[in-house]
Image 1 (cartoon, helix red, strand yellow):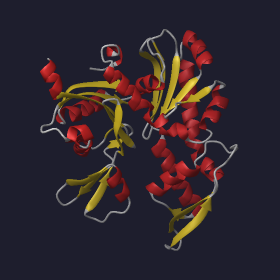
Image 2 (spheres, rainbow, N blue to C red):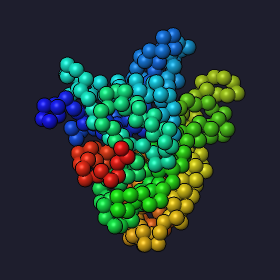
Image 3 (spheres, rainbow, N blue to C red):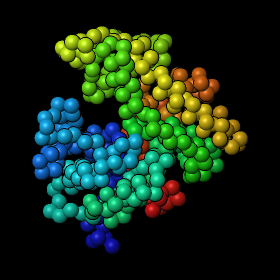
Length: 342
C-alpha cells in the first residue's frame, strides 16, 4: 500500500459561492474568488480566481466572467469543473509532479442541498481525478473548524454566513439535529447595496464597488461604538449618464442591509424554536457560534445577541473556519466517518 500512497494526494476543498479554499498538507494553498473568465469565441477559460475577479464588470463582448456556483451549489457544470481543475493544478507541491496524482478529497456542501446538486459536486470532483470523494455539510465543518467537540452529547448552534447561503444548524452527537439553509448571505447584501444606491442616490454601481462598500463600511446596527469613516463611492449617474462620486456613511448601509438581516434573525429564531428542550438548555449555556465571511459584518454579533438573548461568539478566522474543519476531517477520516456523506 505504501507505494500507492505516493500516488495519492489528500486535499480538502471548501467550494464556496464567493471564494474557493483548498487545504493540502495542513496548509491553505488556494484562497481565490470562485470566478472564471471565458472567451466567448471558443469557450476557452482564460483566467480563474483573482485574475478573473479583476476583469469582472470590465470585459468586452468577447470575454464573459462567470461565477460557476450560485447559492452554494454548482450552477454551471462545465466551468466549475475547469475552475476546480485549474485550482488543483496551481497547488505548489502538485505542480512539480510529472503526472497528476489521484486525489482523496473532502468537499463541503450546504446542508439544504438536493441529491441532484450533491451528485453534480461529486461528479465534478471525480472528473478532476478524485478517486475517493467524501462530502461534509458546511455547518458541521464550521463547527469542527471553530474547535467545537461535535462528538459530545451536548448541543451547539452554528450560524455560517457565506456568500450564497446562510447555514444554521444545531449539532449534537456528531449529527445535525435541526437545520435551516437560507439563500440570504453575502451576495444578497451586495445586491442590497447596489439597489440602495440606485433608488436613493440615482447612482449605478457595479458588483465589485458594492462589495468594497460592504467590507469597508458595512454595518448591521445603527449605533456602532467606533463607526468607520464615510466612504466616497464612484459610479454612473442614472439621470445624466455622467460618472459621479458621492459620500456614503455606515448608517446608510445599515438601512440598505436591514431587511436581509431581519430575515437571517428570523431564521435563527425558527431554528431555535425547533430545537429539543435538552439541547436548547445546552445552547443557553454555550451560546451561538458565528462563522463565514458574512459574520464579519460590523455589529452583527451584537444584533443577534439582542434578538436571541444569548451570547454570540464570532470564530477566530471566520473566512477559513469551514475549510479548517474540512482539513481536520481529512486528517482524521476514520474518527469522523459518521459525519461524512460517502
